[in-house]
Length: 388
Image 1: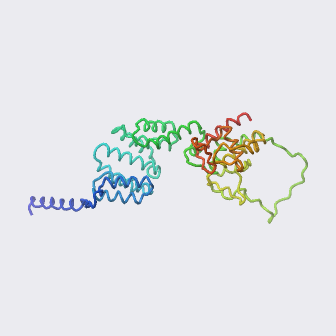
Image 2: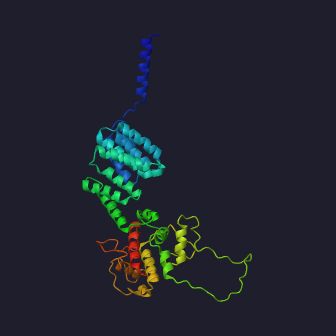
Image 3: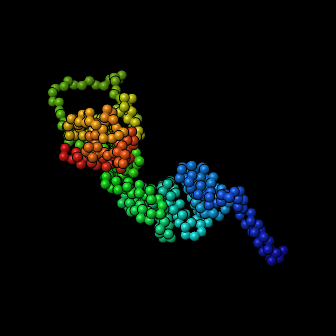
């Protein structure tokens, strides 16, 4: 066979494989059966948390146009939300290869930011650097797009760099082109955390939580309020100098006292929980079944009663326990015969706590208490106890 014939044969073979490997677009079955519509539907489902439904929509968009970058971008996010970051990054890489124009390229950069932010160390040890790199690429192409600033703000928030996070959220608000409500909420949280000024690493970690547990509260009391030091200063040590007969030695079969809380042995905040239990704060003691329930969320009413007990013990003012009994309630959702009414009034009249909904004036006693709110309350409490 001549060289010319070999060359022609190879070219035909290459064309055959190229044709075989090229995905054939699916046939449109309805007016709205378009890649754009399915991507839009998929994004709505992603936002609603229906990841399987979103993936189906993105797959249909890809089937209709195998080179449509937003379909792969959506798949990358969908798989990542389900915890499959490897598959997510694989789809994102395809999105990058098919992206046309600055807008699609920026969308891919933001998609990468979201995946690295979602998985953090699970995706890459240098996840923050990856987020920042894609942020710079996105803002370099289209500096007037809010998404890159918003997710960079979330990345700074995760690193406890609250001032830098605030700056990014401010950029979103200044642009006023999307994610305004979300950025406004995050900006308000950053301002609240900066006012609370958490001094410990664990305080910063708890500050960004939507709600706190009993274990979290124990840690805040120890690390931010330094309640153990407050109690040491307030409580006088007493010494029994009377004669005591030599004690009996331990004998097998004698009763051994059980630990005060049986469910904290392996808890990461065990030391803080033990310290709070030892102090004897009302509301922070083990339950009758000898469990502490460290992961149980703390309600606003419970927090108020705990703070009331701390105030009474440190100030020595026992009258606080009954100060507001019989008074009219200023909150429409809080009756004055409830067991925690007095505690709520003690906290709110001192500015330690506020109404949950300023507009409606409701206290929301059964509601959770966010980390930033707890920190602000503890900061106010600490300043009021400084003279004792």
